[in-house]
Amino acid sequence: MTQKSVAIIGGGPAGLMAAEVLAARGHSVTVYDAMPSFGRKFLLAGKSGLNITHSEEFSSFATRFGAANARLARSLEAFTPDDVRAWAAELGTETFVGSSGRVFPTVMKASPLLRAWLKRLAEAGVALRPRHRLLRFEGRQPVFSTPEGEFLGAADAVLLALGGASWPRLGSDAGWVGLLREKGVEIADFRPANCGFDVAWSEIFSSRFAGEPVKSVTMSSDAGTLQGEFVVSRTGVEGSLVYAHASALRDRLDQTGAACLTLDLTPGRSLEKLTAALARQPAGTSLSNRLRKAAGLEGVKAALLRECANTKDLGDPQACARIIKALPVPLLRPRPIEEAISSAGGITFEALDDTFMLSALPGIFAAGEMLDWEAPTGGYLLTACMATGRTAADGIDAWLRG
Image (cartoon, rainbow, N blue to C red):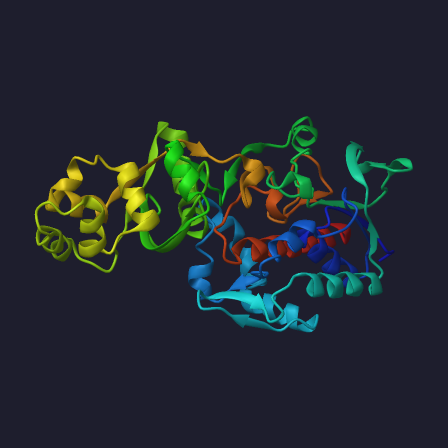
Protein backbone atom coordinates (compact mmCIF):
# COMPACT_ATOMS: atom_id res chain seq x y z
CA MET A 1 0.00 0.00 0.00
CA THR A 2 1.24 3.50 -0.85
CA GLN A 3 1.96 5.39 2.36
CA LYS A 4 -1.09 7.33 3.49
CA SER A 5 -1.11 10.57 5.47
CA VAL A 6 -3.11 11.23 8.64
CA ALA A 7 -3.76 14.58 10.27
CA ILE A 8 -4.41 14.36 14.02
CA ILE A 9 -5.84 17.55 15.47
CA GLY A 10 -5.25 17.75 19.20
CA GLY A 11 -2.04 16.85 21.04
CA GLY A 12 -3.48 15.38 24.22
CA PRO A 13 -3.46 11.72 25.32
CA ALA A 14 -6.07 10.56 22.76
CA GLY A 15 -4.34 12.20 19.81
CA LEU A 16 -0.82 11.17 20.82
CA MET A 17 -1.89 7.57 21.41
CA ALA A 18 -3.52 7.43 17.98
CA ALA A 19 -0.35 8.88 16.45
CA GLU A 20 1.72 6.15 18.07
CA VAL A 21 -0.49 3.38 16.68
CA LEU A 22 -0.74 4.85 13.18
CA ALA A 23 2.98 5.53 12.86
CA ALA A 24 3.67 1.91 13.84
CA ARG A 25 1.34 0.83 11.02
CA GLY A 26 3.47 2.71 8.48
CA HIS A 27 1.37 5.84 7.95
CA SER A 28 2.68 9.39 7.68
CA VAL A 29 1.31 11.15 10.76
CA THR A 30 1.17 14.84 11.68
CA VAL A 31 -0.20 16.02 15.03
CA TYR A 32 -1.47 19.59 15.18
CA ASP A 33 -2.26 21.54 18.34
CA ALA A 34 -3.43 25.10 18.92
CA MET A 35 -1.21 25.56 21.97
CA PRO A 36 2.54 26.29 21.96
CA SER A 37 3.28 22.81 23.38
CA PHE A 38 1.64 19.40 23.60
CA GLY A 39 -0.15 17.64 26.44
CA ARG A 40 -0.82 20.72 28.57
CA LYS A 41 -3.85 19.29 30.37
CA PHE A 42 -1.93 16.04 30.82
CA LEU A 43 0.82 18.00 32.57
CA LEU A 44 -1.66 19.87 34.76
CA ALA A 45 -3.28 16.58 35.80
CA GLY A 46 0.15 15.42 36.92
CA LYS A 47 1.01 18.52 38.89
CA SER A 48 0.14 16.86 42.20
CA GLY A 49 0.91 13.32 41.03
CA LEU A 50 -0.27 11.89 37.72
CA ASN A 51 -3.13 9.45 38.31
CA ILE A 52 -2.58 7.33 35.22
CA THR A 53 -5.15 4.54 35.74
CA HIS A 54 -6.85 2.45 38.45
CA SER A 55 -6.01 -0.98 39.82
CA GLU A 56 -9.50 -2.26 40.58
CA GLU A 57 -10.77 -5.40 38.87
CA PHE A 58 -11.44 -4.69 35.20
CA SER A 59 -15.04 -5.90 35.54
CA SER A 60 -15.62 -2.98 37.93
CA PHE A 61 -13.37 -0.53 36.09
CA ALA A 62 -15.43 -0.91 32.92
CA THR A 63 -18.64 0.14 34.71
CA ARG A 64 -17.43 3.64 35.72
CA PHE A 65 -18.50 5.39 32.52
CA GLY A 66 -22.25 5.65 33.12
CA ALA A 67 -24.44 5.67 30.03
CA ALA A 68 -21.38 5.16 27.81
CA ASN A 69 -20.27 1.87 29.42
CA ALA A 70 -21.40 -0.29 26.50
CA ARG A 71 -20.02 2.05 23.82
CA LEU A 72 -16.58 2.20 25.46
CA ALA A 73 -16.36 -1.49 26.35
CA ARG A 74 -14.51 -2.59 23.20
CA SER A 75 -11.95 0.22 23.51
CA LEU A 76 -11.28 -0.48 27.17
CA GLU A 77 -10.98 -4.22 26.63
CA ALA A 78 -8.36 -3.55 23.96
CA PHE A 79 -6.35 -1.23 26.23
CA THR A 80 -6.87 -2.18 29.85
CA PRO A 81 -5.37 -0.57 32.97
CA ASP A 82 -2.69 -3.29 32.94
CA ASP A 83 -1.88 -2.29 29.35
CA VAL A 84 -1.57 1.34 30.45
CA ARG A 85 0.98 0.38 33.10
CA ALA A 86 2.93 -1.76 30.62
CA TRP A 87 2.91 1.09 28.09
CA ALA A 88 4.25 3.53 30.70
CA ALA A 89 6.97 1.05 31.68
CA GLU A 90 8.09 0.81 28.03
CA LEU A 91 8.61 4.58 28.18
CA GLY A 92 10.75 4.25 31.31
CA THR A 93 8.03 5.20 33.82
CA GLU A 94 7.44 2.63 36.54
CA THR A 95 4.15 2.85 38.41
CA PHE A 96 2.77 1.93 41.83
CA VAL A 97 -0.68 1.42 43.34
CA GLY A 98 -1.66 3.97 45.99
CA SER A 99 -3.76 3.25 49.08
CA SER A 100 -6.93 4.26 47.18
CA GLY A 101 -6.22 1.82 44.36
CA ARG A 102 -5.19 4.61 42.02
CA VAL A 103 -2.05 4.07 39.94
CA PHE A 104 0.71 6.70 39.86
CA PRO A 105 4.16 7.02 38.30
CA THR A 106 6.85 6.29 40.89
CA VAL A 107 8.33 9.74 40.22
CA MET A 108 4.86 11.30 40.86
CA LYS A 109 5.25 13.58 37.83
CA ALA A 110 3.78 13.72 34.34
CA SER A 111 6.62 15.56 32.62
CA PRO A 112 9.15 12.67 32.33
CA LEU A 113 6.49 10.41 30.80
CA LEU A 114 5.34 13.08 28.35
CA ARG A 115 8.92 13.90 27.30
CA ALA A 116 9.69 10.24 26.66
CA TRP A 117 6.43 9.83 24.75
CA LEU A 118 7.03 12.82 22.47
CA LYS A 119 10.61 11.67 21.88
CA ARG A 120 9.42 8.22 20.83
CA LEU A 121 6.82 9.72 18.50
CA ALA A 122 9.42 11.97 16.86
CA GLU A 123 11.76 9.01 16.39
CA ALA A 124 8.88 7.13 14.73
CA GLY A 125 8.55 9.94 12.21
CA VAL A 126 5.50 11.69 13.69
CA ALA A 127 5.54 15.41 12.86
CA LEU A 128 4.47 17.67 15.74
CA ARG A 129 3.02 21.04 14.75
CA PRO A 130 2.14 23.40 17.64
CA ARG A 131 0.36 26.75 17.22
CA HIS A 132 -2.00 25.35 14.59
CA ARG A 133 -5.62 26.17 15.42
CA LEU A 134 -8.37 24.52 13.38
CA LEU A 135 -10.40 27.08 11.43
CA ARG A 136 -12.51 25.05 9.00
CA PHE A 137 -12.57 22.15 6.58
CA GLU A 138 -12.23 22.35 2.82
CA GLY A 139 -13.76 19.06 1.86
CA ARG A 140 -12.01 16.65 4.21
CA GLN A 141 -8.89 18.82 4.49
CA PRO A 142 -8.41 20.86 7.69
CA VAL A 143 -7.39 24.49 7.43
CA PHE A 144 -5.42 25.98 10.34
CA SER A 145 -4.60 29.42 11.62
CA THR A 146 -0.86 29.67 12.33
CA PRO A 147 1.52 32.52 13.21
CA GLU A 148 2.53 32.53 9.53
CA GLY A 149 -1.04 32.61 8.21
CA GLU A 150 -3.52 29.97 7.07
CA PHE A 151 -2.25 26.46 6.39
CA LEU A 152 -3.98 23.56 4.61
CA GLY A 153 -3.23 20.27 6.36
CA ALA A 154 -3.71 17.92 3.42
CA ALA A 155 -4.31 14.34 4.57
CA ASP A 156 -5.99 11.10 3.51
CA ALA A 157 -7.75 10.82 6.88
CA VAL A 158 -8.29 13.08 9.88
CA LEU A 159 -8.63 12.37 13.59
CA LEU A 160 -10.19 15.02 15.82
CA ALA A 161 -8.96 14.82 19.42
CA LEU A 162 -9.72 18.37 20.50
CA GLY A 163 -10.88 17.68 24.06
CA GLY A 164 -14.01 18.77 25.89
CA ALA A 165 -14.91 22.10 27.43
CA SER A 166 -13.09 22.16 30.77
CA TRP A 167 -9.88 24.13 31.36
CA PRO A 168 -10.12 26.20 28.15
CA ARG A 169 -6.88 28.03 28.95
CA LEU A 170 -5.10 24.72 28.32
CA GLY A 171 -6.69 24.32 24.91
CA SER A 172 -9.95 22.43 25.55
CA ASP A 173 -12.33 25.27 24.72
CA ALA A 174 -14.96 23.37 22.65
CA GLY A 175 -14.43 25.88 19.84
CA TRP A 176 -15.02 23.06 17.36
CA VAL A 177 -18.68 22.53 18.29
CA GLY A 178 -20.20 25.05 15.87
CA LEU A 179 -17.96 23.88 13.04
CA LEU A 180 -19.12 20.27 13.31
CA ARG A 181 -22.77 21.08 14.00
CA GLU A 182 -22.84 23.05 10.75
CA LYS A 183 -21.81 19.84 9.00
CA GLY A 184 -24.61 17.81 10.54
CA VAL A 185 -22.74 16.16 13.42
CA GLU A 186 -24.95 15.59 16.47
CA ILE A 187 -23.35 17.03 19.61
CA ALA A 188 -24.76 16.93 23.13
CA ASP A 189 -24.31 20.20 25.00
CA PHE A 190 -21.32 20.25 27.33
CA ARG A 191 -21.86 20.24 31.10
CA PRO A 192 -19.37 20.28 33.97
CA ALA A 193 -18.22 16.95 35.40
CA ASN A 194 -16.01 16.26 38.42
CA CYS A 195 -16.84 19.75 39.62
CA GLY A 196 -17.59 21.69 42.77
CA PHE A 197 -20.95 23.21 43.66
CA ASP A 198 -22.15 26.55 44.97
CA VAL A 199 -23.79 26.70 48.40
CA ALA A 200 -25.48 29.73 49.99
CA TRP A 201 -22.99 30.02 52.84
CA SER A 202 -23.35 32.86 55.29
CA GLU A 203 -20.61 35.46 55.04
CA ILE A 204 -19.36 34.54 58.51
CA PHE A 205 -19.04 30.85 57.65
CA SER A 206 -17.40 31.30 54.25
CA SER A 207 -14.91 33.91 55.44
CA ARG A 208 -13.85 31.78 58.40
CA PHE A 209 -13.80 28.29 56.90
CA ALA A 210 -13.04 28.67 53.16
CA GLY A 211 -10.24 26.26 52.35
CA GLU A 212 -10.89 24.01 55.37
CA PRO A 213 -10.96 20.25 54.72
CA VAL A 214 -13.87 18.28 56.17
CA LYS A 215 -12.40 14.87 56.93
CA SER A 216 -13.79 11.44 57.79
CA VAL A 217 -17.39 11.89 56.67
CA THR A 218 -19.74 9.97 54.46
CA MET A 219 -21.64 11.75 51.71
CA SER A 220 -24.86 10.48 50.15
CA SER A 221 -26.71 11.37 46.95
CA ASP A 222 -28.36 9.55 44.05
CA ALA A 223 -24.86 8.16 43.40
CA GLY A 224 -24.93 6.22 46.68
CA THR A 225 -22.98 6.64 49.92
CA LEU A 226 -19.21 7.12 49.93
CA GLN A 227 -16.70 7.95 52.66
CA GLY A 228 -13.86 10.41 52.32
CA GLU A 229 -13.24 14.13 52.63
CA PHE A 230 -14.04 17.37 50.86
CA VAL A 231 -13.16 21.04 51.10
CA VAL A 232 -15.27 24.05 52.00
CA SER A 233 -14.67 26.72 49.36
CA ARG A 234 -15.59 30.39 49.46
CA THR A 235 -18.58 29.69 47.23
CA GLY A 236 -19.52 26.13 48.22
CA VAL A 237 -17.95 22.67 48.26
CA GLU A 238 -15.29 20.90 46.20
CA GLY A 239 -12.80 18.05 46.45
CA SER A 240 -12.62 14.33 45.70
CA LEU A 241 -15.69 13.25 47.66
CA VAL A 242 -17.83 15.93 46.00
CA TYR A 243 -16.49 15.00 42.56
CA ALA A 244 -17.54 11.38 43.13
CA HIS A 245 -21.14 12.60 43.50
CA ALA A 246 -20.94 15.41 40.94
CA SER A 247 -22.66 13.67 38.04
CA ALA A 248 -25.68 12.63 40.14
CA LEU A 249 -25.96 16.04 41.82
CA ARG A 250 -25.65 17.91 38.51
CA ASP A 251 -28.31 15.73 36.88
CA ARG A 252 -30.66 16.21 39.85
CA LEU A 253 -30.24 19.99 39.58
CA ASP A 254 -30.89 19.82 35.83
CA GLN A 255 -34.02 17.73 36.28
CA THR A 256 -35.62 19.34 39.33
CA GLY A 257 -33.80 22.60 39.96
CA ALA A 258 -32.90 21.44 43.48
CA ALA A 259 -30.38 19.04 44.97
CA CYS A 260 -28.62 18.46 48.24
CA LEU A 261 -25.82 16.26 49.43
CA THR A 262 -26.32 14.51 52.78
CA LEU A 263 -23.47 14.23 55.28
CA ASP A 264 -22.88 11.83 58.13
CA LEU A 265 -20.47 13.80 60.30
CA THR A 266 -19.74 10.84 62.59
CA PRO A 267 -19.69 7.72 60.38
CA GLY A 268 -18.09 5.62 63.11
CA ARG A 269 -20.88 6.25 65.64
CA SER A 270 -24.33 4.68 65.55
CA LEU A 271 -27.41 6.85 65.88
CA GLU A 272 -28.32 5.12 69.16
CA LYS A 273 -24.92 5.63 70.78
CA LEU A 274 -24.73 9.22 69.60
CA THR A 275 -28.20 9.97 70.98
CA ALA A 276 -27.27 8.44 74.35
CA ALA A 277 -24.02 10.42 74.53
CA LEU A 278 -25.82 13.69 73.81
CA ALA A 279 -28.51 12.88 76.40
CA ARG A 280 -25.88 12.35 79.12
CA GLN A 281 -24.62 15.92 78.84
CA PRO A 282 -25.53 18.03 81.90
CA ALA A 283 -28.30 20.59 81.56
CA GLY A 284 -26.94 24.03 80.90
CA THR A 285 -23.93 22.78 78.90
CA SER A 286 -23.34 24.98 75.86
CA LEU A 287 -24.04 23.58 72.42
CA SER A 288 -20.35 23.83 71.51
CA ASN A 289 -19.32 21.76 74.52
CA ARG A 290 -22.11 19.21 73.99
CA LEU A 291 -21.07 18.67 70.38
CA ARG A 292 -17.41 18.42 71.29
CA LYS A 293 -17.78 16.11 74.30
CA ALA A 294 -20.62 13.87 73.09
CA ALA A 295 -20.02 13.78 69.33
CA GLY A 296 -16.41 14.82 68.89
CA LEU A 297 -17.51 17.68 66.66
CA GLU A 298 -15.63 20.95 66.65
CA GLY A 299 -14.12 23.37 64.19
CA VAL A 300 -15.47 23.16 60.64
CA LYS A 301 -17.71 20.15 61.35
CA ALA A 302 -19.48 21.89 64.23
CA ALA A 303 -19.75 25.04 62.15
CA LEU A 304 -21.28 23.08 59.24
CA LEU A 305 -23.89 21.70 61.60
CA ARG A 306 -24.82 25.18 62.82
CA GLU A 307 -24.79 26.53 59.25
CA CYS A 308 -27.08 23.92 57.71
CA ALA A 309 -29.38 22.89 60.60
CA ASN A 310 -32.04 24.69 62.58
CA THR A 311 -30.28 25.46 65.85
CA LYS A 312 -33.56 24.93 67.74
CA ASP A 313 -33.44 21.23 66.77
CA LEU A 314 -29.92 20.86 68.10
CA GLY A 315 -31.12 21.25 71.68
CA ASP A 316 -32.95 17.90 71.61
CA PRO A 317 -30.58 14.86 71.83
CA GLN A 318 -32.61 12.68 69.45
CA ALA A 319 -33.14 15.42 66.86
CA CYS A 320 -29.51 16.56 67.13
CA ALA A 321 -28.20 13.01 66.62
CA ARG A 322 -30.43 12.50 63.56
CA ILE A 323 -29.15 15.73 62.01
CA ILE A 324 -25.51 14.87 62.73
CA LYS A 325 -26.00 11.51 60.99
CA ALA A 326 -27.86 13.00 58.00
CA LEU A 327 -27.06 16.69 57.56
CA PRO A 328 -28.55 18.07 54.32
CA VAL A 329 -26.43 20.64 52.47
CA PRO A 330 -28.58 22.32 49.76
CA LEU A 331 -26.77 23.10 46.52
CA LEU A 332 -27.41 26.03 44.21
CA ARG A 333 -25.61 25.08 41.00
CA PRO A 334 -22.44 23.42 39.68
CA ARG A 335 -19.39 25.60 39.43
CA PRO A 336 -18.66 26.90 35.90
CA ILE A 337 -17.46 24.34 33.39
CA GLU A 338 -14.21 26.29 32.98
CA GLU A 339 -13.29 25.17 36.51
CA ALA A 340 -14.36 21.53 36.15
CA ILE A 341 -11.81 18.75 35.99
CA SER A 342 -13.64 17.28 33.01
CA SER A 343 -16.84 17.70 31.04
CA ALA A 344 -19.87 15.66 30.05
CA GLY A 345 -21.38 15.98 26.58
CA GLY A 346 -19.80 16.08 23.15
CA ILE A 347 -20.17 14.13 19.91
CA THR A 348 -22.91 11.57 20.47
CA PHE A 349 -22.17 7.92 19.80
CA GLU A 350 -25.13 7.92 17.41
CA ALA A 351 -23.09 10.29 15.21
CA LEU A 352 -20.27 7.74 14.97
CA ASP A 353 -19.80 4.31 13.53
CA ASP A 354 -18.14 1.53 15.52
CA THR A 355 -14.67 2.76 14.52
CA PHE A 356 -15.39 6.32 15.77
CA MET A 357 -15.71 7.73 12.26
CA LEU A 358 -18.21 10.55 11.88
CA SER A 359 -21.13 9.26 9.84
CA ALA A 360 -21.71 12.72 8.36
CA LEU A 361 -18.04 13.16 7.41
CA PRO A 362 -16.46 9.97 6.02
CA GLY A 363 -12.72 9.88 6.60
CA ILE A 364 -12.92 12.08 9.71
CA PHE A 365 -12.75 10.33 13.08
CA ALA A 366 -13.01 11.53 16.70
CA ALA A 367 -11.68 10.33 20.05
CA GLY A 368 -11.09 11.34 23.66
CA GLU A 369 -13.09 13.88 25.64
CA MET A 370 -14.75 15.17 22.45
CA LEU A 371 -17.06 12.17 22.69
CA ASP A 372 -20.17 12.11 24.88
CA TRP A 373 -18.96 10.22 27.94
CA GLU A 374 -17.82 11.04 31.44
CA ALA A 375 -16.07 9.24 34.27
CA PRO A 376 -15.00 9.91 37.84
CA THR A 377 -11.47 10.90 38.75
CA GLY A 378 -9.15 8.05 39.63
CA GLY A 379 -7.42 7.27 36.33
CA TYR A 380 -10.61 6.46 34.42
CA LEU A 381 -10.54 9.62 32.31
CA LEU A 382 -6.97 9.23 31.11
CA THR A 383 -7.30 5.51 30.39
CA ALA A 384 -10.46 6.00 28.33
CA CYS A 385 -8.94 8.88 26.37
CA MET A 386 -5.98 6.74 25.36
CA ALA A 387 -8.19 3.72 24.68
CA THR A 388 -10.52 5.65 22.37
CA GLY A 389 -7.49 7.10 20.60
CA ARG A 390 -6.29 3.57 19.86
CA THR A 391 -9.73 2.47 18.65
CA ALA A 392 -9.96 5.45 16.31
CA ALA A 393 -6.44 4.70 15.03
CA ASP A 394 -7.49 1.13 14.26
CA GLY A 395 -10.51 2.51 12.41
CA ILE A 396 -8.40 4.95 10.41
CA ASP A 397 -5.93 2.21 9.48
CA ALA A 398 -8.73 -0.08 8.30
CA TRP A 399 -10.42 2.74 6.36
CA LEU A 400 -7.20 3.76 4.61
CA ARG A 401 -6.57 0.16 3.63
CA GLY A 402 -10.00 0.00 2.09
